[in-house]
Image 1 (cartoon, rainbow, N blue to C red):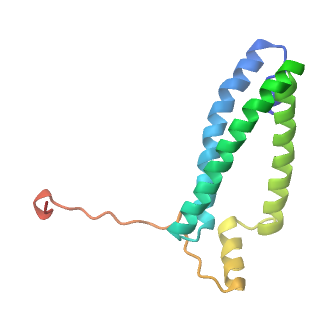
Image 2: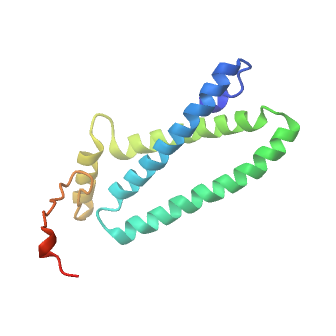
Length: 144
């Protein structure tokens, strides 16, 4: 919606879309990291592999997006925003449909994935609900 907001000729709407876009991008990167942590099942090697794939895909998308946006802008100044808005809307529908098919409706993701893991015979370690204890150390207890 924010990409389409950049196409509105009213300047305050375009500026608000641009400002909010950066904030939402930051939250989207954080959400992707959280989902990678969730689906890694507590395995650090799997998590790191997923993070590498995620960050490389993000970087590749940024590079390709820059070239495509430049070419589209030469044809039509609103072209890059219309294209990215359409791609984002399509990705939203595909992602949401896929997650609903995988997890189902009315079940939280933690419960659904725990049931799926049991069906597949995997041991699921919940990483984002686990409590990590903090050990209080005195400075004199540490050795250098």
